[in-house]
Image 1: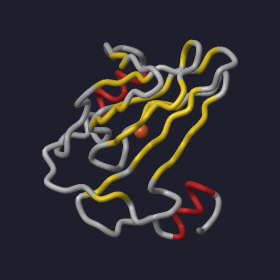
Image 2: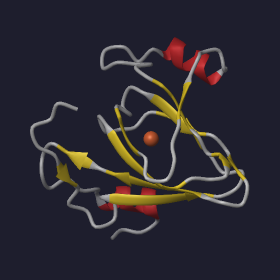
Image 3: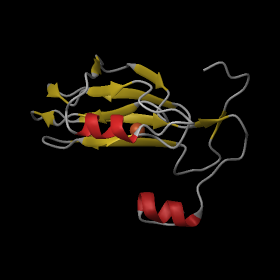
Image 4: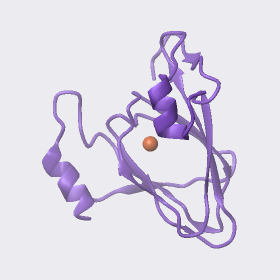
Length: 137
Ligand SMILES: [Fe+2]
């Protein structure tokens, strides 16, 4: 990422998230708010639950709505990032469209999302805690 220094979030809830996807659960196409995203796959499902992406679909000066519409219509070539338990994935989620395909089988997909910033002291507001986690602290 060409960063001199990174700081973990100063937030006891949002600094590290662990998400579990059970059979038929998925995460839809989206971009992240943060410039880059760090994930660590803790457990891979038997099948499905793949990390699918399209790098640089948009840029800071071009939201590329036409390209996003084409992606959502299934008209763009995407890639799968093969992952097994222990895979560390660092990607530019702000411009890379990505999703998790539906998990198949009994073994859930368990993924940790670790958030870092160039400035220390970053934390969610009380409203963001409520929106993301259903509680304020
Ligand atoms: Fe994301």
